[in-house]
Image (cartoon, rainbow, N blue to C red; front, side, top):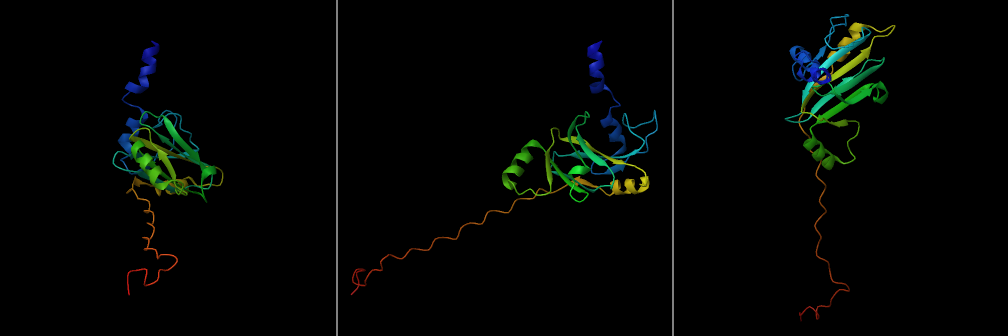
Length: 193
């Protein structure tokens, strides 16, 4: 009995990934409808939070999520198709209310880190444990905030595959010029007249 219960999330045809897959294409942000008890698209949704979803695929290159987030509480969690959260961040970590995340597969992340070293800057580079997954964005609808404005902010999120940029090549040192002998040789020492 315990084995069957534990296997249900892995064999269910209506898991979160399947539900999201019917609503959202890759590289598209979709704001989920307001949560109504018993009709939630994903389990345990709070009616006071606006949810948006973006599917990603890092099999063919890096993927970026760039957003200007709502002024109240917000968060983004990155999840595998099975729903395992592998990265989460909230409004406390943003720079001026904006956030840029770049996702890469394991091999691409190694190359990225070797090329970039410490000069990554404001971009949060995240290694995805699976080639596909989804970003679940949450924005709190608190007193004095407009649900429609939060939904619009989430719809404006950039969520697409990007071209890998190559770090600038190091500047090669100037070729050395032949050194003059020191002390200078006299013409008679050079074999001249």
